[in-house]
Image 1 (spheres, rainbow, N blue to C red):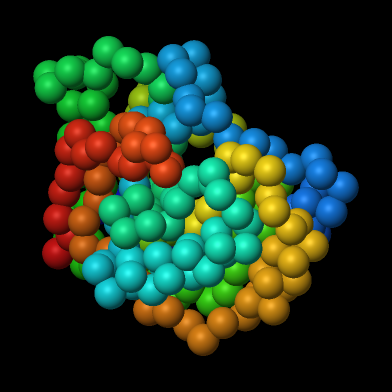
Image 2: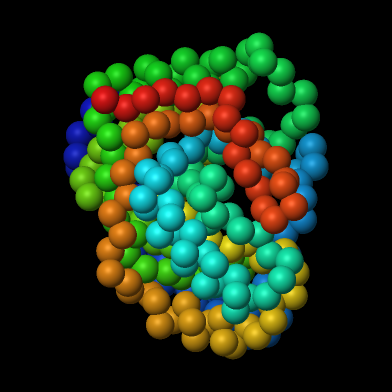
Length: 236
C-alpha cells in the first residue's frame, strides 16, 4: 500500500466536527426541522454501493446496546443502523443506489480489485468509540482511530480506485463514525433525546477492531438498512 507523508495525510479526527454536528442536530430536533429517512430508490443519493469497515463482534454488541437505549427514547419507527449486522464505518461511498447489481457486475469487480490492492500488508485497524453526537438525521457514535493506519488505507483506496473514486472526489470526510439510529418517524420526545445524547458526549472508550473490509450495497429489512456484501478482503 502506498504511504502518503504524514504531513500531507488527511486525518479523519476532527473532534470539532462532532461538536458542530451536535449543535446543528440539537437545534433541528428542538425546532422540528430534523430529517426523516425514507427507503432509498434508484436515483437517490444515499445508500449506494460503499466501502465499509465492519466492527468486531464484541464492539458490535456494545454499539447495539447504545442503539437500543437511543431508540427507546426516540420512539417507534426509527432505523436501527447500529444493530449487530448493520453497524459499520463508511470508508467511502462509491455510487448512487441502483437495482441492477448482478454477481458479475463490472463496477463492483473494479471496486473489489482496488480494495485488495490498497489493503496489501495492512494489519487490522483499531478505533475507539469515545462518545455520541447528534445530526439532523441520526444519533451517531464518534470513532477515533488509534493511529494513522485507517486514514492511510482510506487514502490508498482513493488512489487505487482511480476514475472510480469520482463520487467523493471533491468531498473530504473529516471523521470516522457509526450511526446508531436514523430518524424515520416523529421523535417521541426530542428534548429528552437531546439531553440523553448531551450526557453521553464522552463515554468510557469502546475498543473496536476491524479485520475485514467490505464492498456492500443496501437493503431495507423493515427496521433499517442492512448491508448486503458484494465483495470483501481480510486485513493482515
